[in-house]
Length: 399
Image (cartoon, rainbow, N blue to C red; front, top):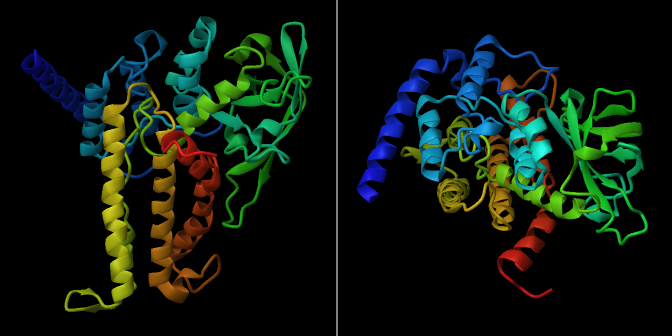
């Protein structure tokens, strides 16, 4: 039996390799554009072709059931697919909150009608999704959210606002945690509803960050409409649904979400290569012993992180892990931030440029990335929240 399974996997690998080599356009290899479903962003020709071919194959969401746009791959097959994509240096055909967050949540907790209505389109990359969780007065204390949703016939009327809604200006839909019953305890009167953003009642205001980028926004709901049958997991069950979705989000940040075809495809850090440009060398090695030691630890931790991601995917019993996603997500974020700090330490004054003459484009990009990636220990739950989850849910420590 085991020998036959190995033979079948070898055949799957050979067939997968052949198909990818023949069908992955040159413009979809290496670094470059990766679609997240937004109808507002024009795709390059090869990127569009790659998306269409992979969606037809079911490999934009390879572990989903076939009737919802997937290929129903098991874990060994999924791992082979990712290996072969990496071998070609092929970019994922599709990413984003559709295939990574709300899609798997609907697949697990949605009604049959919701699955049939939403999942095939998500798998084809038809519509970019925003995330409506945090509010000005409800960040880490998310259960204090106040955005109201009042039932009116077959739909809900939404009033309130969300903040830090990533990429909202380019999204078509948003999944929103709302207050559907203010008379219940704050954790119990919450629902998660799907909302079309192409309506007058939804307004998006970009938030400019210190890095100069504006990936985040404030999203206002003024008599916005959401269908009553688009409440996922049942009315007033949003806290449970929302927490499960956060596990999918955190596992995506950690590189271990196997919903889409990007899970585990962590790009090898270029920090060691870039550091060589700025530090003097003695006898073939970096002269600064302190930075040399930090770089060695960084590389060892990076290797350990990749092994942990691989192990987590292979041990996965569901499409997203449980509370261990918090641990892998946090260590991944801290590793990226340590790489940024290492680079700036090596660059000295060359790492202080944000704009203007006197700095190369690469130096400006490094500094801006350092500023932007401070958000990695905030997005998807702050570092402090993750440490609490790890202590209570992973290690079983007392309150």
